[in-house]
Image (cartoon, rainbow, N blue to C red; front, side, top):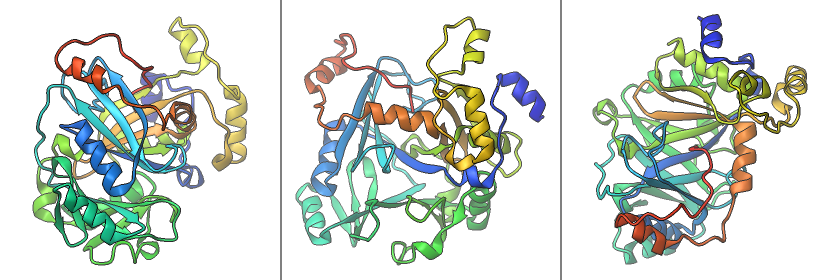
Length: 360
């Protein structure tokens, strides 16, 4: 099946199933929905001190359903504490014309460290948020756990989801996506949480906490659960995709692997002009073979959308091109054009105000 797969999808980069290369992957962000974008951004800013990292408007639905399955114009706002190529963040998607989302039963909470828990809880209470211990329920029912400031540079501590079977879910993330159980590194952060496993790539990154809950885990995934995005070295991405496509470890393919900025050979085969690619593909592959973890960037943005054994969506995006693209798109001081959005919501859509990055 591997040969057929490569031929059918025109892959010119051989999938590299290398633990060292896969281990260089980085959890990038989690997608959430907003029925009122301004309310969600205000909540995240006033309660958690997050800032807008970039904002993009789209006239058409995303071909790989970044905005869910809604056939509407939409927007994407990346929110967090630092550049997307260096820190974890949230992707807040807004679908024009959608005023309500079903409550999530699968996404348990997002844990964030703050300098002063009492001040954070007071800010949430002042905004009318529901508070239960260290859990704040924000707009659209999303739950955030507040933790004390840790020694980690990253303020996002983990994302917790409900799974039907803990060992089965952790086996998928380990065997299909190459994660490791990081429980020993996150004992303080997950204290008080009935975690089956803490799955991740490195202790300084944001892990996925699996909470076994047969009732919530067995529930059908909704649009509100959003999507987990992981930046994976390009050659390793193809290897992980094959693992899922060949159904070796459960899960399934939601959107087949695709190229956004193709290699010269692919573009020539499609009658397209060449795009800058540095270093050249042959040099990239030589460096990759010599030291998989330190391969230099290349100009191919590869994306595949898969699901885990419980139906949670996972976006696998090639780390080299993605990190370069989001670094260039980083615009933390730019204001969102709320007047333009108001007109767009009323049906008066003028030309889009910003350049659109690929939907990742």
